[in-house]
Picture (cartoon, rainbow, N blue to C red):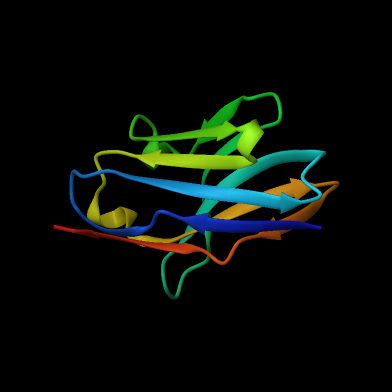
Length: 115
């Protein structure tokens, strides 16, 4: 079992920055990759960024050049640095971990970007 706890969300003006954190606990070994998703009310959640166990990263086109996913293995933490935020980035951001084909989710942290 893996537990995920996100933090770092909040209110920010367009053009500003936030850094989200996701701390993993429990049986964290053999996590294949971790991802950040976001969800707007009434819509399905969409993947934003992913980081593989190898360290490779991938991003949805809308955040490329603005968001950076990274991790600190010693702290079992994955980060999402979000720069030049836009109003359309407003959503609840969720951390996801995949281990042995099973998905684990945090409860999410809300991000609100005002114009």
